[in-house]
Length: 128
Image 1 (tube, helix red, strand yellow):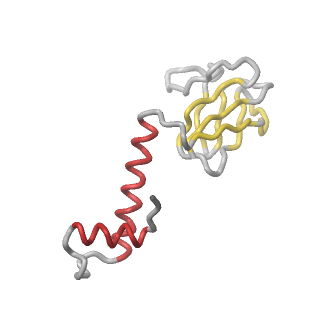
Image 2 (cartoon, one colour):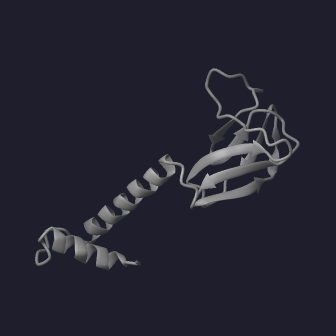
């Protein structure tokens, strides 16, 4: 069952019994559809649905002092996991109480920063 946005709007207006009024403009109705889609998508992520998951290999953009940075994919929405591609070890998210060479990751300026000098590629699993 596929619906276009305009069909969803018309159906919702009929259900609310406001189909013959201009109480809500098109822009506001479109925003309601987008908000609803975001809520449903966030729910699916929260329950662990992997239908919209992608995996990519992250190649280092270079080491800077005690950390290594990686480019973030353009279509990334939420990170599911990051792991070492060779060993399969999961890399935890950085906490403020950790040191500079703790081996965890953080997102800084649209880049994934791994707080250790890395020589291998990482496997990023994320929701689009």
